[in-house]
Image (cartoon, rainbow, N blue to C red; front, side):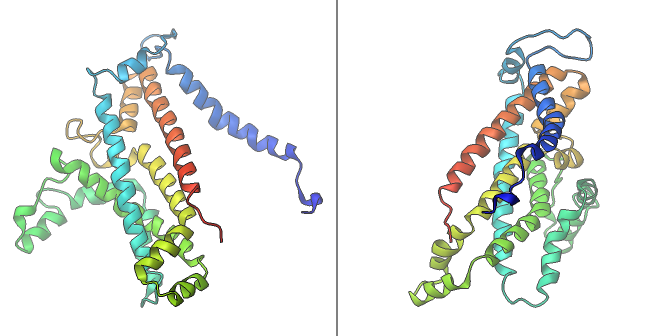
Amino acid sequence: MNKSKIYPGYFLIGALAIYFVLLLLPSLVGIYYSFTDWNSFDPAIHFVGLANFKKVFSADELYGFYIWNTIKFTLFTTFLKTLIGFGAALLLIRNVKWINFHRMVMFSPQVLSFVIVGLIFRSLFNPTEGFINETLKLIGLGALGQNWLGDIKWAFSSIMAVDTWKGAGYLMVLFIAGLKSIPEMYYEAAEIDGANYFQKMAKVTLPLIMPVITITLVLNITYGLRVFDSVYVLTNGGPGFATGVLNTVVFKEFSKGTYAVGSALSTILFVFICTFCYFLIQAMNKKEVDY
């Protein structure tokens, strides 16, 4: 490599300074406040050790339920979005008529604001005049109509369905890029060896797009664990507290003025995301194949 094209290390100082001031420093300050009694009722801030974390994990509080809801949302939406996005990519990488139109239709929900998506789906899910229940009545399946966002049994599933609908197209684009990068000669060699479709998928396609799968999993998991907008717009954590997740609770804690408890919840989320993504990337990198 030509050393004259290697930029000096001090070129990084500006970027690192901005990163430290705007991201790292606020994160460290937030972690510090999670060990205090910071609130809106008393200007004095006192160090209280692990008291906020003991409260979060106390059996008398509902925070454990919100953590479980967040994990459940992450697992289901990651699985569904990856499955649908990969399936759509396999279909739309072939010679299909109006292929760009189909790709555009799949991707278009991604560019919509979740406020708009939420308003649209609150209308569609309306139990009395909504499009879904009216359509079910029209085709003679009115008994299947539900109070999609107001019933505890259906509210969380409805949120996950809307989030999956919005995000699957984005993953489809990533998977199409990964599939197109695989050299055709590997498939030709597999066909010569007599491999069928599923054998080519297992031995050629999946190993060679493992970097794309890793990226999509990390993006989905970090998004799922930080989810706020879809839950807030569609149900605001209701009915009752049935669809509450960590970030909606953090929002409510800050709204109530109990900043330290909100900071403790954010710290738990931060540590969990960093730890989980580190081990996920390490595990997935071992399965990557160079070509």
